[in-house]
Length: 263
Image 1 (cartoon, helix red, strand yellow):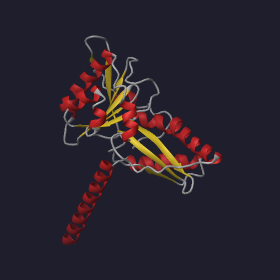
Image 2 (cartoon, one colour; image 1 turned 60 degrees about the vertical axis):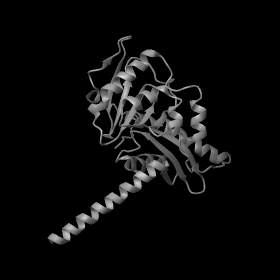
Image 3 (tube, helix red, strand yellow; image 1 turned 180 degrees about the vertical axis):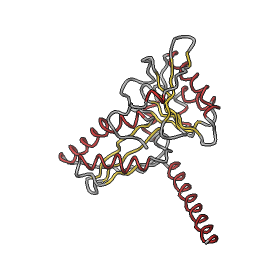
Image 4 (spheres, one colour; image 1 turned 30 degrees about the vertical axis):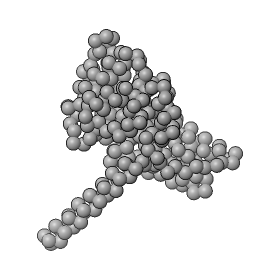
């Protein structure tokens, strides 16, 4: 579960891989941090070199986002040279890599480290000049049915307060665990806050717990107008969630049948 505390560094030293890969051209190191999601690792720069300008919004690229991949040689190298990577989330000083559950980290981790250190040494941008405009136009490669809201002055203040809480109290803790959170809006009629979880959060089994008992509880505590928090999912995530629910129901039915047979 992603811990929603302002600082979450107590066990950081234990999670750091102490054998960094050193780039030949410059003494740069990238360390590996585990995340609450066993299929996601956080690769963090430890020498002050950045993947993006400090404080930039995280960039998410899936291996099926060919439109976005065409505008990021960095992502293209990772997807081509490391088969099994499903998604990248690029922060300012870190990259979170989500892999296929059937692929072992030993098969791709050394290559990921090499590509990241070589990229930092090169000083090149992670995306091309047209990437942002393409991303905004395509919604990150997917069309998402995102509601639009119009606020009066009071409602605008509430929306800004929600966004400030997310940016200052929630997002830092989520990012520390290799994820990120994107505020998409607040519905003044229903009190519903719409968010998108990214990076290590997207396929983590504890993401729903984080959403409801962490993020939702904190926002409702500070903003009485907030009644519910909903995660926005892209089509692939919705399909995966439905398939997972089907599998859980089948397993539950099988266990129930076996229990009756042995009773």
